[in-house]
Length: 167
Image (cartoon, rainbow, N blue to C red; front, top):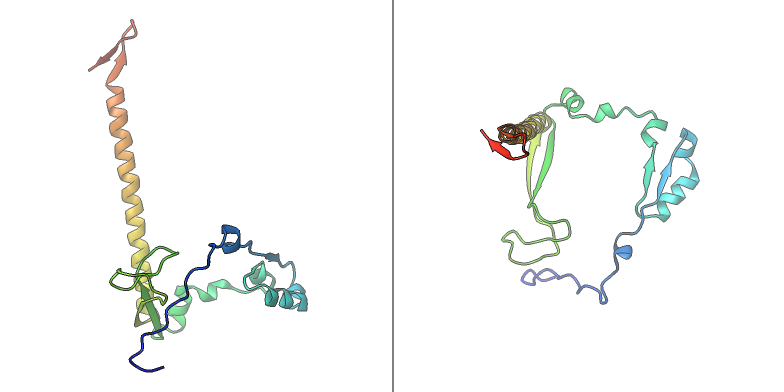
């Protein structure tokens, strides 16, 4: 391709549009009960014949310790290891806009940066703490709203004739 040519554009959407069943086919799921099933040729053939499949119980039958993949374990093993971070523009899952948000595009834009596992762990921990604070604030606001509602309700009582009296 010549350097001055624009990148190819995606084809027009199909007509008639695909149905929801065509766009969201059911995802086959397999449950493994033992290690022999995990290495069976039937499972391999199943996975090769289905582009998307859920394999349940794989980590337990293979006795994989998922704790080995935790951020804490990775930091302990190699804190200075460089990792690539991709940051994407937040947008709807079925849309992809250019960085200026003017037109829909085919390619997905993402900003590339690098950090260490240790710095990423700090970012992850601070994000988690911020989420907890936000959740705590929401709960506190909800409780304050309920308390003020109950205070206003407690100042209203019924007299013997059934009329409401506000104190």
